[in-house]
Length: 424
Image (tube, rainbow, N blue to C red; front, side, top):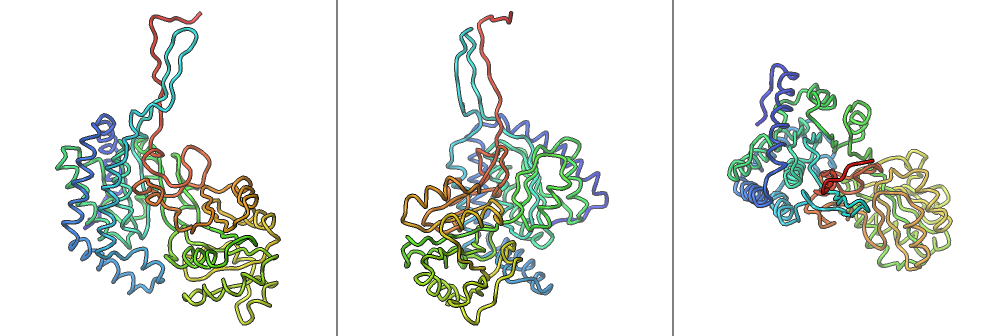
């Protein structure tokens, strides 16, 4: 359970100092020691599953009392399966290659200098997140594997759950002989703590990763005085081309929207090739509605969707995170590219098509972090990419982009070996 603190500024400064000290130890920690800690964390999470679920029940009950949306409850709520998935995710991270010390490139100069570019930890990472308690486990484990210390600031809505999960992470660190300060959780729900982290804790935070709603990410991007890995929102699109297989299209579209509506990889806009509207429009709309999805259609689709709500301009810029989707007819792949270019948040887009030229244009001309062909946008996930887990999805263009896993949580340095060379 998180304790409230009297002096936020002093408390946060102390967290930063302790994290920086722990980062020094982690940077040189052997792979075997880090993996031992990760495996012990996973075991501790499973062994304390009942306690974690009990803490989560408190958070969920409070959220329901406050009348929050069902999509929010879905992100917040844990069950035995999700707790096990957290533990398994940590074990998958342990099984990954250690990126620290990996030689990215090596070359020799004519003067005999031998140069290597080698991966190194970023240092101290601050993670600010809202309702998802599993981020506590994912972020802590990923940062540790990459040799970084981390300061976790979860939302007040998931405070009990995050605290219980953090206890298991601390137990794993202790068992492996690593500093428990390697993974710290902010011991207050006071919003001033976020401001202290964004200011960098006197230079002790190297990178901030926000994971939450649009208002949180916007604040972080606006106020942070340290680098940020972030995406503002997931305005994800699916384009169904005239060359698509109808059965495949229906299955993928329904999964992309309805598997979990509250995640950032959920599809929010469906684009249909106008040339095949007679074939695709009605079956796709009916398949979505059969699963409980509210469909809003562009005005030129009324012939295929009478009685449905008409989409407005706002629908093309809305991340619903709910069982709602906006549908529009476009003029082939060119129309899809134009619409996505105008409205996309550069997170994830999918094309359903059998025409290789359509797929090639989609991949080459759309500038989003993740592009999929004949697959659901719900695969926009570090675990599904084989990264074990992710700390978030980055949509910027510097350093990290797409799922942020262990490699993206490293920087690099140059090692230059000589044999007495001097420069003229």
